Image (tube, helix red, strand yellow):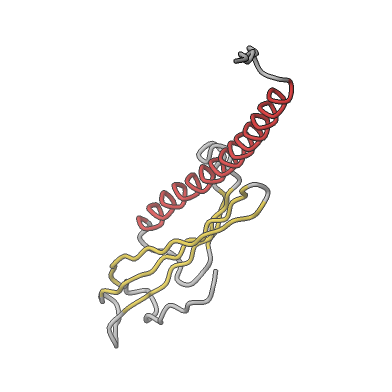
Length: 151
């Protein structure tokens, strides 16, 4: 009986195939990692814009009388927005009221806030709505329904 001689180590072909498989795996892993980091950056910008929008909505809800059905707008302070280039537009109007409402009547006011920001070189926007109860003042005109025209 002949004994077969076993070689120790790997052949050149086995090493080349293993190296190729590892290279493909590393390239795929790095590609997925880059995509994940890009998505995380986009989500961070969106979260920052949402936080700014909530803060601005809180400010607007605290203003006793906003001009009715007029668009007001402004820019977010870059120091507050961590460098995010963002702007806002808002409009307030009477959303719900009882027929024949006049001064001293309670109404439901709707505040619509649109936030625009840049994300990855593209302009993005979203809209928030806030509602509050308030009483009509003597110098205010009678309420009209809030029209749903876009900002």
